[in-house]
Image (cartoon, rainbow, N blue to C red; front, side):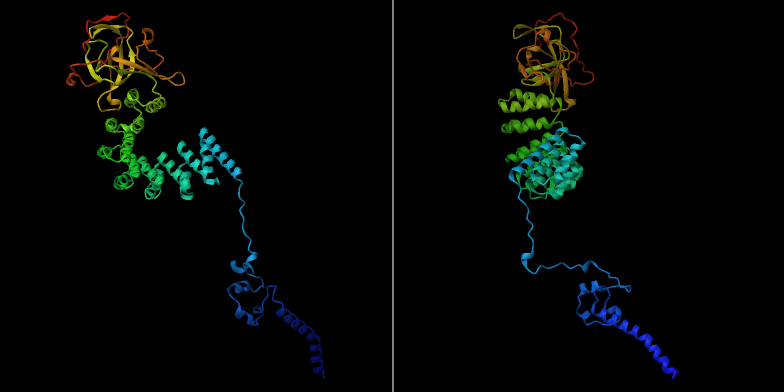
Length: 493
């Protein structure tokens, strides 16, 4: 009896608990959304067999009942109809506004280029790499080439931009000629773009690397396109190798105009002493290429080159070529007085005397720089007439050596030369004078550096009579006495 009562009491108190657990279990089976799944309860669910990998990844949970989501847990919503796709529309810019923005960008580049400081390079480089308009980026690339800076930005533009911008960037790195651009030049000679290929051959020359020279010799001058060969010859000139002179001569005598122009440009950039002689011979053979030859000689910033330019300006009948030379003379600030030999020949003498020893003989049309003028006047008999004039101390180049080593100095009697003055255009214009300066104006101002050269007529002259200028050859300076000296006859006459 007591046993039955005990069983009854146990059932009475435990039944509500069993009912609560059963109800909770049934509720969770119907509602698994809150992160707790049937699999966690130990009861298999038939729907698991039909789940794909993405669904499985969303239901992997820990024993704590928390969700663990992976990268693939968020599936894109696929539109049920094509009408649900939204079209991206880019608004068209007003043409006038676009034109104005391009104008402002180019104006900004010009302003920074005029300032030409570190900040200018940064700002132009920024416009090159970020401006939305190719016209502005092209001008920025061109500007950096003129400034000669911003190589890294130009390299980035070549790597990331297209067409005109890449072309101008290549031209600019060629203009700068840095060895850091070597890999771009090597790649550029393989390009199908003419502008890039041409700039690359010139750039290889400016790097003066042995690799670049090998590429020019083995590939550049063998190109089928004459204009590309011309660019390769221009690049070859920068190496200034004597063994390359035969190559230049070969192309100077070519029947292809582009080949001749390339050889002329290459000789212009070469620093070899006898390249000017090659250029003057090329002018005799090809007078139609005078502007190219003038430009090539202009690349040489020596006194002999200046004298040759003045000679060409004096002898040329083309006003345009004369203007070209005049502009170059202004650029190199070749201001001063120059002598042009007007007789058949004129002797440079050791001192300001008609019977003084000869240093050299200048031919008709040769140009020299006037260094000094004697204070005293001299009389000499020329062509059966007694002429009174001064002696001029001149500097000229002699022979084929157009470097400083080839410059000679000597005195010439005034009647044998014409004098031209090249003055600073900011002060006065270029004046050509056929008459000699008056005694008062012929004495050079000590505050100005003046270079003079002159010559005398020679009839029976032998080159063996002249000694090569050296340490023992001295030019006397007879500029102290103001009393005139008299000679019965000029020795040259």
